[in-house]
Image 1 (cartoon, rainbow, N blue to C red):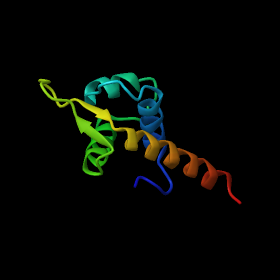
Image 2 (cartoon, helix red, strand yellow):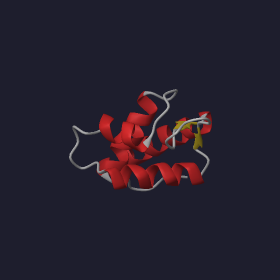
Image 3 (cartoon, helix red, strand yellow):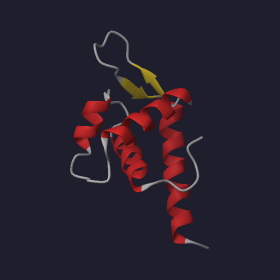
Image 4 (cartoon, rainbow, N blue to C red):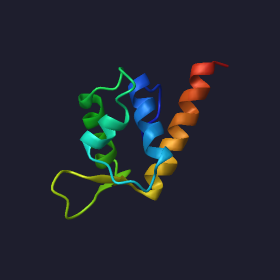
Length: 93
């Protein structure tokens, strides 16, 4: 489960994913969508995608030339929870 304190890059990645939960993403399209945020590098996007795939929060979209992924329903919920918990931990007690 992607919980605990999230980096600024990871928060932005997760927020982008849950903002468009049905969208199909490649590392490139997700990196491009986050290009306005200097803290989000392609390596961070790749690491997040690989982590989410390993945890089965994302699944590979078949018949695509480049690795293309989409959030699972459980993945969407897990990211929402992770972002809420991270916001609470950043606010303090």
